[in-house]
Image (cartoon, rainbow, N blue to C red; front, side, top):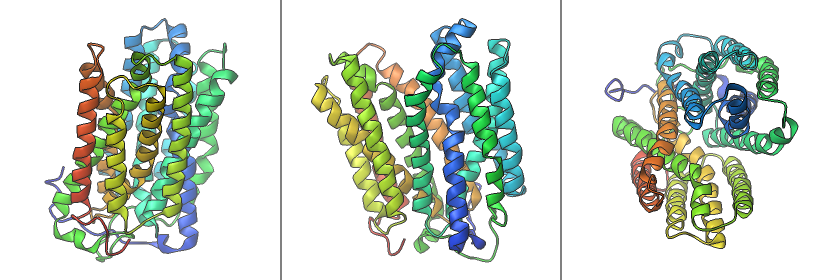
Length: 403
């Protein structure tokens, strides 16, 4: 993948340098990232109803979500072929219709096998739109702010789903949940028109994308590889730790109710930090933000060692989630600043999905004995590795010449 980009062309700015087009892109990103990521966010809500309806065991439930996540990520592969050839409006319209239809059919699925097939197709379409979502911020004058919006919208929708869906759909089965998602997705269809006149593909006019670091052209392949590796390590660590946060707390003897409150507080901290990153937008301090955020994440993971009491667990969880959602927009904008064309962020989507899928599996294997020490140490080291790679991504400079 990296070998195929020895000379990475700059991406030209179309109309996206205007305030009006920036607003259109930000609105599109906010709406679609919130609705599309419900494919992944509803997992805690529908696991129980799915088990009841299809008489599944935990392995089958896990297999379903793994298939969805894998398809969401693998949508990157065909995107290498169509992303530079198809109008984004047409691509979004078609894929949105597929996602809405997929949710609708999921509610009527007669068997678990049929449901898996439908969910894979639905996730492929959702992942295809996500490729566009990750490419769009580089078409704005402030990619950092756009990526912040990408993260904030997901977090807010996730918090809303976890707070509201369980009470609304209690005792009604899984079908109404899928049908609600179908309606939400269909309501996004008119937003596809916001992308009219906005091009995703690179041209040969030599223009530099907004937020790009001019020195990036000197060693694009090394920085490209470092950025992708940093993103992968980041997602492996965060998905592994966050998946087992509850179990780590329970293993330390903290009450389930108290743990739930702590995780809710941490989620609120995550929304707050993503909002801060969105308000700050693109910054010449991107390198400092990345290094500082990743260092705080690693320290938060280290606080989980030794069976943390409730107060220590609270500090660790809040710092972890706050740093996680603050760092992510800047890590993505650092990649988007490289002169790698639309496929830079397309490949980033593959790293996100791959890291997200591997993290819980690796963490599960490392903590299989019931002791979380090895898992915590490995994930803390992965975050430190991501920190070093982030410095390489920024060209070895923590303060950029310009944003």
